[in-house]
Image 1 (spheres, rainbow, N blue to C red):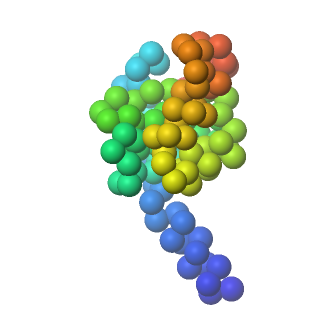
Image 2: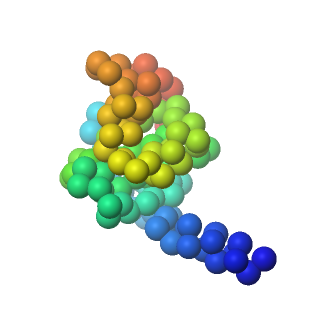
Length: 114
């Protein structure tokens, strides 16, 4: 049981609640990160931070210094993104997608209201 608790604590160490933080998201505007769980990323030169609101299936990801929104993303996809050996490659292949209308593009998916 102790090992399980240590594993859970270690897994959550990189994630934090982002209460009282407001960011500017490209194509979306100002966003309060209160409902989001954010993970700071240090192992990627492309992805700096990923924030996810599971109840709305909404992710904002900081690529270098700019935040981008992604709508109707399943929790499983978000977890796979965080666990990917190369977050940049996973992002380009599975999140951004091919063409201007990727699989989670907020122009063609439900955009949550905060």
